[in-house]
Length: 390
Image (tube, rainbow, N blue to C red; front, side, top):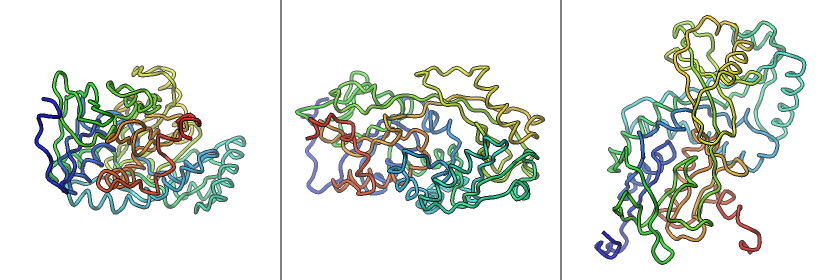
């Protein structure tokens, strides 16, 4: 079928939207648009929520993850963190499923003198940004988390940082999308985007065309591989590999209750007793192999922070691919050179954190054609050559 075969849309109707990618970003956008009355089809080549969204730890760490050079990203992260409680409550109500939002706060601990110097430097930088952080002595840190290494020298507590169970959240989004009238197509690979006279006509599925007025490219680390688009329209996204693992704890007497960042690792406790240990950061393309060195580094760092982990059984080990952009910030809004193509990718390590604001801003753009001021600095045009942008 070609675009000319389709019936004309009635005036003032909602656009037909095809979303490429069934991770937390694509599902969240699809849910918002379906709830607003759009005909929405989400295409996922495997199982929804089973790629980077499953591999993540679900940290909502806008505070402790604020780093020098990423100051422009901080307001977006803080706003999305603020949105998460209402987003989670709405999602739970829409799906009837829990998403495991926890708001105990996050701790960053130092074990050695070198760790302490780094911790203090980061603390001073983050405090200058206006973040509400609390400095803890080693004894104060141990009062909050008794199973930490006895040699903990100090810690920083961030009360507004927390976590969500990303796997549960994706499961809830699948249900909420369906209840809102959206259609999820799993095991269906989009092989290209059809462009006619500079505008999207739909997405290519094998030999067929699924027509759409708007195409949202939310394929994470795979977003740059989409055929049919001019080079200028493809987002500069690459895979950033991460290896992770989990161990089991006694849910009634867990080793940790807060998310804890130690030197060279982070530890994320779930309510069911799962303790997630992450994560390596590797420029290895799409190499999905677990390596002895990567797992050893994670286990050693976790053991130094939380010695009791030594006796806990390993329950899972996995890899994932963060969608990294050139500046490690998301790419949000209209693509360059193709009308009707919208980008929602490049979230790097912040895909879970930024899901609510991405969903709201992209859905708002699709419906009203206006770029949300909160994402205005994260468009694809920031990567365009200066002469082309001018």
